Length: 98
Length: 264
Image (cartoon, rainbow over all chains, first blue to last red; front, side, top):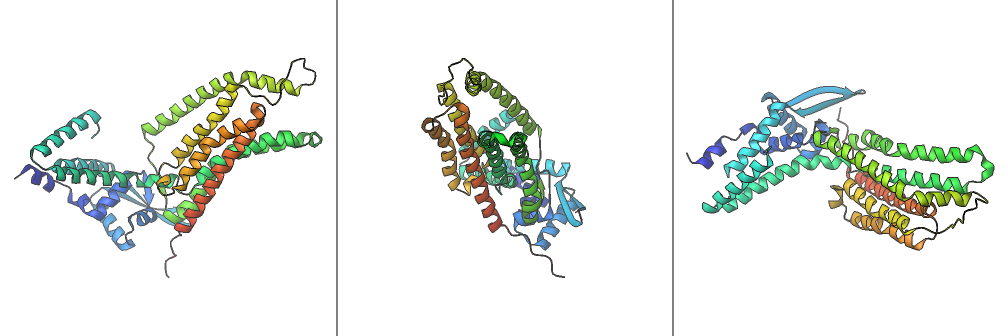
């Protein structure tokens, strides 16, 4: 197999999907944020964002914490250590693929 | 990625390989993808200054300092301890303006509209804070040494029959340069506060130029001693930052509505 094709095939498919890539890139720039922030930034609908986050949580890349601020429910989201490593590797592989 | 030299060497090799294989357009595309990702990662940073409350806090701080200084000369002596009390209150208000503005804006303006976000404070951030404190302290020390004769002269001019030829209304060239330097200093600070939002608000470039040149104009046009001229300079700088912050906040409130409540 050609080197370039092999590099592309090695890309993490969980992160490579555009919606999830956007979520991971946004989370990589911050310590943590809430659901409303991601909703505002990604301009996805709640259902889409929830399903992408569930997929990322399942893969162990994102940590989701349900909490309260005063009496208001809040969903806190942060990238796990594994998620950060995988995202860094993804960026390196993306560059290497070309 | 972590080692910049290794990353640079790899980049050079990749460019050479792409040239050899005639795939430079693919390389450009990959670089664009990387730039897009980098931009996306930095996008949340704009929320630190997006609503203009940082500028408002900074503006209020300078404005309170100017008003405290004005209050000490404008208020009549008959007010007794109230005179220094009002000046002191304005001074304390100025010191609290920035943290209070930032806290209030986060809690009541930004978070209900665009959500909660906490930024990563890595080693570089803390190093920046330490460098800023050290540089700020050193600059203050140097300025206090340079302005010492000016301060002594100002104090002597207020003592009746001091036996010293006090010359009110005259400022030394050094003091003039220092006071005019407040312009560039504030312009840099203004640019740092608006590093991201200045791309969306082009009018801020005009404000920056005014902040840069305003103190120079005041220094060379308004007669008086260092303290006398520093009052209008601070008033100007404070008002500029405050107005810029208020306009930015107005824009933010117009363009970011809180999400509609869920239907029951």
